[in-house]
Amino acid sequence: MRQLRPKAVISYAYTNIQRLLSKKVPYSLLLALPNLYFFRNSTVLYTLVIKQVLSLN
Image (cartoon, rainbow, N blue to C red; front, side, top):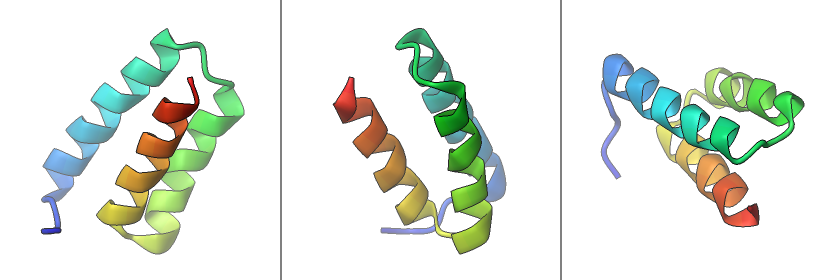
């Protein structure tokens, strides 16, 4: 999977956070996502986490 450019990552994350908010996911979970992203610096991991969270709803 190719690495996205920072702008693409931010907009991708933003649209997914909007989707998460509309599903009323706990706020602490949303806070954990960017931390995971910056800690690992991995677009793939970030995407997997988001997909996992979205599938829980």
